[in-house]
Every structure is written in structure tokens, then in C-alpha cells.
Length: 307
Image 1: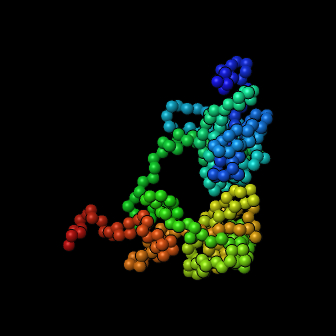
Image 2: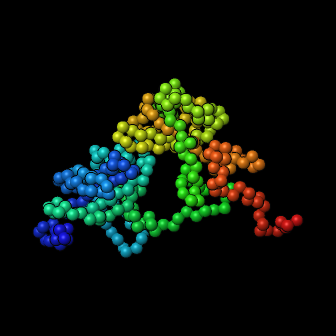
């Protein structure tokens, strides 16, 4: 076994690491580096990935044999392209990281996974980026969220699967063309949007009062490098402008985006008159996950609830 031979030898060992950052399913969602002096090409899943030389390093890997909260630090300069994921704000998607260990002089180029997990926080100072990462074992050891008896729906909007939201995201999505961007304020160019996509049947929902359906929704933008940016829509300013949670680097006038409806996690049933979105906006009342008929008076107490 070539790796074992070099690993156990006093003279043959020339250890290097491979670092792979992945924040999406496609090949363009991968950043790959090695702390060796030459590029290395290796199969990762169904793709051939080139790990380019870079000044990147990790901290010490420690393990106590339990699923406790062991963190690993990865450090690299701001000049690496992967810094684009963290430069302005937290990434839109989870950034997973895998580290392989091998030897530069191994003729078989055999590398074994040394550590895997995800990035949980980052800090950039003095032109250097420091990532704090947690191991996949730590994530597996956490307790899952518990369902509660509550009025509002507890489902994550557009989550798919048995017992989940299952609202139709495509039906709640409308493409637009940006007219102007100023910080977190985004203005829609209606004429350009209709020229690009034809009639916009759901644009009427952007007018008062239905425009409020977008509050809590999402703006989707894909830049020239194929990176997807997701920003929460926190306010509808007027009939053509919205405010998002944070600026989107590179997004400017003429950019194509998608706006997705939000949800206030209420029923919208006429008998309840709760102003909900589940039924009227998403036509999804059969998957509502709340309990809107919870009694207003506690059955536990001095009051006799049977008379």
C-alpha cells in the first residue's frame, strides 16, 4: 500500500494535504487547493478535480473518541478565490470541507480522507482568512428540532418530503430584470422584465396589498461564475422596489433575478380570518403544520371546562 509505505517511512515521507470546499452540487461550486508545490488531479465523486497549489494550512486535528465539539481551523490568504464566498457576508449555502492526506512523492498518488465537516464561522484580518470548521461527527451528534403544539406552521417553507411543507416553489417564483441597485434596495425594471420573459401574470401580486406576499421570501441571483446568492426579502418599499437582507456582490442594473413568495405561516382559512398565506397564496392548506384550533383557555386550572 503506497500511502502506508510513505507514511511509516522515516525517509520517504513528504506529507501534503488536499483541501476541497463545496457549497453546491455542480462542478463550478467547488474550490480545491493543495499545500504542495505542484497541482494534483484527483477524482471526487463523478468529477475530476484539480487541486491547485496555494498557501493554505490547517490547525491540529484532535479527537477524544467522542462526538464532542472539536473545531478545526483552516487559514489562507484573501487572494484565494474561495474567499469570495465569505468576503461580504456569510455564504448563502452550507460550505462543506474535506481534507485529504497523502505524500507528494507517492507514485500512486494515493490520498486518504483525514477530516471532513463544514465551515461554521470565519474571520478575516490582516489579509488572512481564518475558518472555524466543525466535524461531521459533531453534526451527527446533535439533537434534532422537535415539533411543538403551536398556532403557526412549523414547516420550513418549500421543504419537500413526507410530513413537510411541499409548497410549489416554482409556482411562487417570478423572473425579473433589475433596474437599479443601491445597497440593499433593489428596483425592478418592468419593461425589461416583460421584454425578457413576456407577460408576467404574477406581477399583479407585487401590487398593493398582495405585494406583501414577497416579505419573508427570497431573491435568487446567479453571477457570471455560476455562484448562487440568496437574500431574504425583508421589506416591499413600493410597487417596483424591495429591500433585501444584505447587498449582493456583482448584482447591478440589467441583472436577471428571481423573486420567490414568502409565507407568514398562518392558514388563511376564512373562518379563522387570520390573514394567512398558506391557503390563498400557496394553495397548500392540506400540508399546514400548525394547530390553529388550540383552545384559548387552559384545561388545567380552577375553571370547569365542561360547563
